[in-house]
Length: 281
Image 1 (spheres, one colour):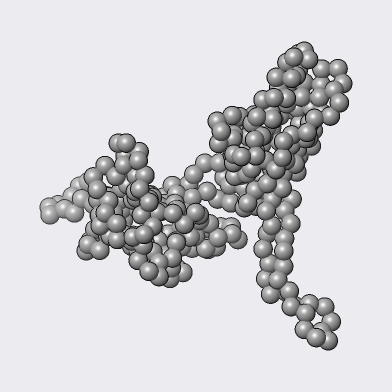
Image 2 (cartoon, rainbow, N blue to C red):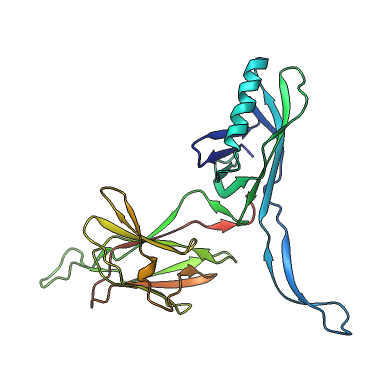
């Protein structure tokens, strides 16, 4: 591992690596426990497992703070303690030697602990807990829908159809994990319907998207809000959901996603955004 960087929602940041000043000699980034649903019928040898789920992930690290003086070490200890404030969540970013990065949302479980100093070094331990056990690809995958696709080429003969709006996209989920997505709708509309044709899941909302606004549909947090692109003010729109709507996710395998606004031959310009998950860095 080249480095670990923790960026707290408080605005503070710490980078741990194999050099000065926060040297890390041990980390466990991949371990995660599981819980199983089991039935034990009377007189039955063993149990019947009906399902299971991963527990929250615990990430411990340990290492040494290396300073230039005792005062410097004291400053570094305070910086680490303030950054690991349990009242704030944050992102832990793991960078491989190859430069590839993954991230995970987490929260410190406690203040860092410090052992007895030796020279200008102080051993420390830190720990985070992650509500969801999946590391995410650092960069977003963005899939546009409703954009204009050219339908002509030179030479051409009139009449010419110059392009059409893409009404659906196929997204392949190569993992074994259901992936939540964020959909940003930029076109003016009073109705948005999104369907995962491959699974039958359907999402429908009757909320107005005005000029210089966009709608964000977040299936990870089950949120819908409208953002003013000028003031950046957000308005909750979950109360405009049509009963029976499902938040759209990407199941393992192919997912054909369709978006419409109730107007024939009109597909609102939208972006489907997600991060590929994994259980290991």
